[in-house]
Image (cartoon, rainbow, N blue to C red; front, side, top):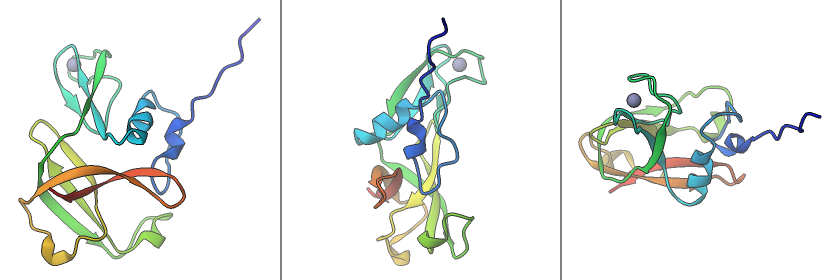
Length: 144
Ligand SMILES: [Zn+2]
């Protein structure tokens, strides 16, 4: 008798629009709920990944451990969006950014309260969990 399969849909809690609810990385959501933004590190070769990956493309290993993104990182580039993909229109305008943490880079949004004259390439940024009004989870960059 086959056991009923439990479907793990934790990832549906991520983001304004969730693109997937099924991944091997659902612990990412549990960690967000605990206030931690996390990537994965390959135990085989030490490669670090953000967004987290369950499989290493360098050594093809799949033994990963989680690590928390601790800062600060440096703002590499950013862009203020006046137009957005379907599903994100109500968030406009918002600013997307790439932040360099040394071994890895993190792509995400800047917190909306940052004004444009506060934003400067090279500035220190920290990442923080953000709870949306509809209880979805995401993360934003803040001034460190
Ligand atoms: Zn590896």
